[in-house]
Amino acid sequence: MSKLIKDSSDREVVALTLLLEVAQVLSRSLELRETTSIVLQKMAEHMGMMRGTITILNRETDEIVIEEAYGLSEEERYRGRYRVGEGVTGQVIQSGQAAVVPRISQEPLFLDRTRSRKKNRLGDKHDVSFFCVPIAIGNEVVGALSADRLFAEDIAFEEDVRLLSIIASLIAQAVKLRRESREQIARLEAENANLQEQLGARFKPANMIGNSHAMSKVYSLIEQVAGSDATVLILGESGVGKELVAHALHYSSPRAGRPFIRVNCAALPEGVIESELFGHEKGAFTGALAQRKGRFELAEGGTIFLDEIGDLSGATQVKLLRVLQEREFERVGGGDTLKANVRVIAATNRDLDKLIREGRFREDLYYRLHVFPIFVPPLRERKTDIILLADHFVEKYTQTRHRSVRRISTPAIDMLMAYHWPGNVRELENCIERAILLSRDGVIHGHHLPPSLQTAEASGTEPEGRLESALNALEKEILVDTLKLTRGNMAAAARRLGLTERVMGLRVAKYAIDPRRFKSMTAAIFTPD
Image (tube, rainbow, N blue to C red; front, side, top):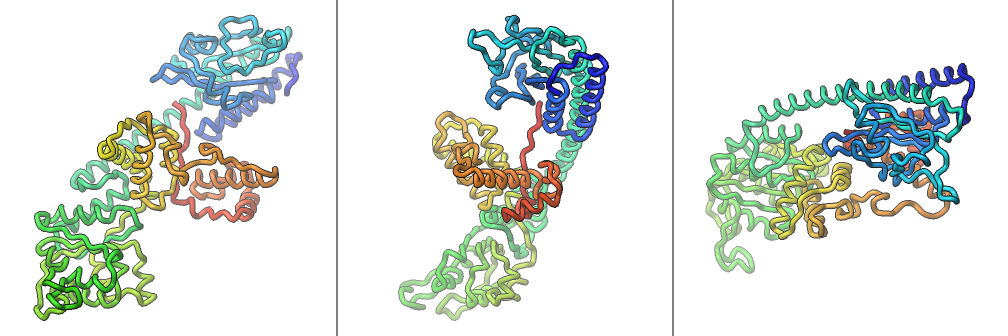
């Protein structure tokens, strides 16, 4: 309610109703940003609060910042920063004692950092009463709860302070519970990471980066097969690092001191690929002016890596099958049979099963290659490795491009983590190289990243035009962002937006949004200090 309540019995009813609703809100979720926002709304409804804030003390920086607010713009919230002991809020957090400013226009300690209290024509502030109480866990003050109300002679200041103190205590209990939950999760994650480190300490290729569970499986497979001569088929999307796996297999094998020869089967024209693989004799065809060794001969005693194996022609597939079966071949135009003491590693981003069904890849060759398959996961399935990879590429290109980049800004990190990376590690590397070339202050900012990673807010591309089209565009964007946050979970997204699942389904159908495309995405969730 917005008007002041004079009757004590009415005040008690309002206070009890407010406390009950606050307790119910705080018990719903451990996500404080959601619950505290609703708490401030409830205070505004029942107490006639004009503005309210929940400020949090960052112990590392000794700075007090507004964590959640009611009645303040984003700019005003950002300006509301204090040091311990500075202003009324700073003194409340320093002393742990509540404070009341009956009329802020007469209180020199009231700094109004947010600049949200407007001035009248005479230059005096409106008569506003300010209440501020500490949020404490035991003897530790972690923040403060404050509220503005229009000044009136009959305001019951003591009762308002007591009510705010109870609400602050409820918030403190929620913070404590959340902190304990975070500490427990952190302990479990640390134990799991320690276990993973112990399990993975036995083997990790020096040329590969990533500590995710998905990559640990790849490392384990490399370790199991590296010491043998078994043919390996590396599967995965373009840009995931299949050649790095092939390198790791070779340099972790007994053949490490012998040649590693790479052949890109997709880059060689069909007319020359046979000669490239097996060599040719002098005069074998027009232009064959001398005998030439093929890649299999050059790889003698070592490893040949056949990249993009799915693009081989049918005729070349037959000849390759013989090499895999008999370990022998002939040069083009020659009659001598040559032995191939070579370990074969192949890779493809193509669906070989589909190619077999379409008659474009030999089934018998597939089974010869598919002795020991290794699937390299796409970057969107190993999000925890993104920052490790980004740091590696920053270090790499600051040296090769002679730049001085010391860090990646938090908004840029958020953008990197939210993106789905269709080009995988190769795309990430290109983005970091581009950002390093654009940076002028030693920091990679969000605007240094390509347009495909930009958000509408960051790039200033909010929808324009007619109101209906703008609202539709905004509604679609909110639906997409929420589905990203819930990884495509329609029910969870509906709850976040306050919609029924039926209405959520109708909205998604209206804009032809496919929730399945977000199932592999992760979203960075804000958590306060």
